[in-house]
Length: 340
Image 1 (tube, one colour):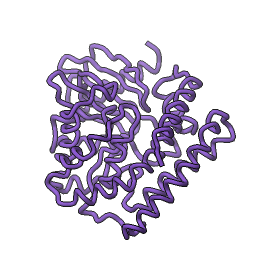
Image 2: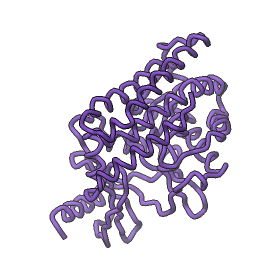
Image 3: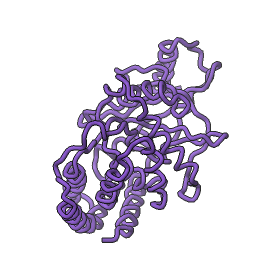
């Protein structure tokens, strides 16, 4: 066992003690995945646990550990059977201990059925039911937007950040002209639609219309149990947000794409107790195409050093050249799917 492995075991022992559990560990196994953090499967006499070591970067002011842990503490009171239970954390080490959930991952859109969509929508609905004091203390979500202009500026910022990195990469340059040209048209169309429908670009969504959002929400961040129940995971960006943004992200994320035919059912299900579903639909219609550009930029964010560093942190053996080539292909596929 090397020095790093010894450190992880020491931290795992301390976390188990912090959780009031027997500190004896049967085994610790790294979980290989393509995300941003280091994950370990801890086998223990009482149950299995997930150890999560969070990536930290000086330019990232958001505390991912605190965001996720606080969200799960709140969610455990409201929807305990839909998320992994948090047990303990050590903030100075950016590490936390969670319930380990055995099950399968959804790997393609062909696997998604109506009952998956219903469970996802019910998760959002239950998360936003009976908002008590613990929920009002939650932060705004990462990249939260509450006006149309904020949505557009968020995407504009992502496009510009990639353009700054373009001179150092011929691969990136090969696709960024397409991104920019489509974005200019989509942005102009969105502004025009606002004018036609008398929507003020700068009007902020009222507090009562905002929702608690998991943020990076999709079937790429879930585990399917044997009984077909869905457990949702990964809440590092969670907080208060525009429901339209949550829906646009849900239907545009690229890891496990979701057919747009499910949008109406999804909205109806999670908005069933509210009377503003048409307002949400209008905002989604206005922003959905713009969010295709956002996700194109997300696919390409491995060309930005701070984002690439997260990937390498999670997987030190990452083939960076292959990753970048694959992301370029994905970006081109997204661009081809955008019809203006």
